[in-house]
Length: 216
Image 1 (cartoon, one colour):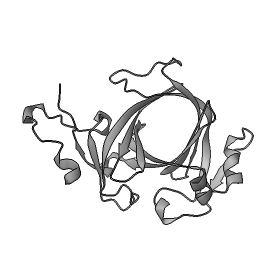
Image 2 (cartoon, rainbow, N blue to C red; image 1 turned 90 degrees about the horizontal axis):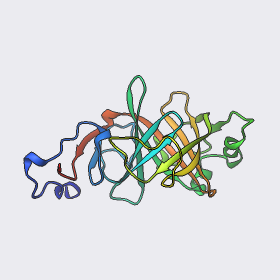
Image 3 (cartoon, rainbow, N blue to C red; image 1 turned 90 degrees about the vertical axis):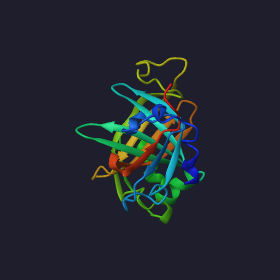
């Protein structure tokens, strides 16, 4: 409770924000994940504070990204996606050494070959990645141009074209046959590459949300 107890001190009840949907989160808000055994241990029954709210713009869509920090050092990245239904995309970043622990690097490098429709196979499943990975992934996005903004445009949306506040990147994605897991890759213009292990979960996996700020 120590992680949550400071949130409400000194606030008048009438000014407390009431959070009813994941998309309403702001910096300093706190979310708690459910006790679902389908969640990784990093998330299950754990609370995280929103430390950043960023924006992504693609050719036909935009996303708000919530960067979460819990009691440990690992950051968690969450976006909300809507098609016929809504779900949460929940990600952690892994470095090159960690990539080599779970995938064959030669197989992984095929992702960037435009003549290959990559089938990425898991080579190992260490305990730390339990419920983060699938046995096989199939490529479904190749070098899609996107723009990242370290800012929150809500209630509006990011610019449709690149501007001075944006960082351009190429986006790659592979997804499991059951569409529950993805590997996402962002290749930035300076050559830096971010690799994310992503799980696609129902919004009901968010058990509670607590406001960190009051209404203006």
